[in-house]
Amino acid sequence: MTSSEAPTAGRRTGRPYDNSGDADILASALDLLAERDYERLTLDEVAARTGKAKTTLYRRWATKEDLVLAAVRSAGRPPEAEALPDTGSLRADLLAVIDSPWLGGTERRQAIFQGLASATRSSVRLADAIRSDVTDPYVDVYRRLLDRAVAGGEVAATAAPRIPVLAEVIPAMSSHRLGSGGPAGRDFFVSVIDDVVLPALGVAAT
Image (cartoon, rainbow, N blue to C red; front, side, top):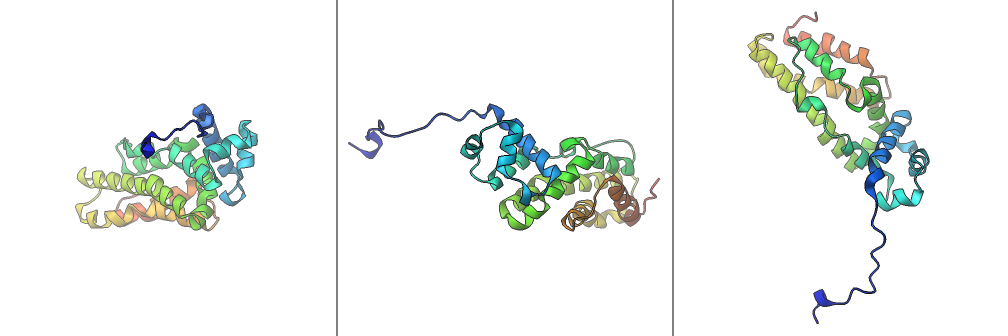
């Protein structure tokens, strides 16, 4: 009898996991991140908020890192990565990205990212996920908006060589501000757009 034919009667498979409540659990994890940082988040709190047994969560996600990683990935990519804003004005397009309803809008989104700031220093897996699922898509969105503005004549072609760096400015400034514990609300992003990005492109903030 080969190993593949060995009896399995004594093997315990356990009860199949019911993942119908996963969406609520992951959403609650993001809610808690918006209220406190990663270091103070516990699976016990998530269980209490969702009315789930702690053992249910631990069966699905063995560690807090696993749960938060799943929560980040459940949010998907910024919707602007699939469909760029097209308001007819570069400034308005940039503001439309800032004002996106993704993850509950600007304030909640930044609260979540601020809650994750400490995680990026302590967890390589979370840092990689945030970079690939959030930061890199945002950089690509801004690059495409700036390229389109050049193609449409709103930005001079001579500014084109600066676009790869300028596309990183808003995400980089956001990461720096959140990592230092400072506020990163809408006014902050408007200032970055009006005082840094547009002047560097030779575009008036009107």
